[in-house]
Length: 96
Image (cartoon, rainbow, N blue to C red; front, top):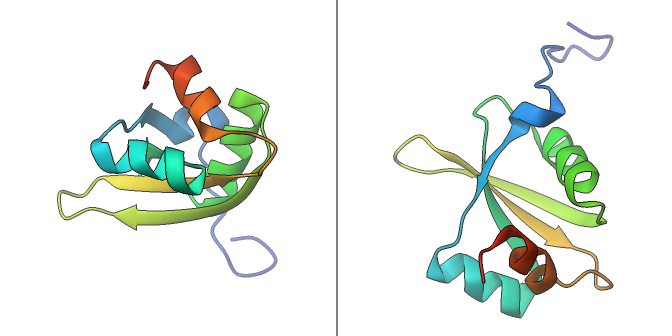
């Protein structure tokens, strides 16, 4: 445990993000809210997801929301800064 009482078994940056999600809802979020959706490791935390996305894609992340689906998959909804369009990043990933 760390000095604040939290766990210290951090997931490495490479293992945090599994894959991008390219459903209709994810594409709609890219267009309307400047968000990207990723499947992430079950052990990943918000700060780790933010750091991984910023390092992998060289972009600025404003906010990260995490949801665990009924199937047990963890998804991260990543809101990008206004100067970085999510559509551009999605196109580079082959989602568009």
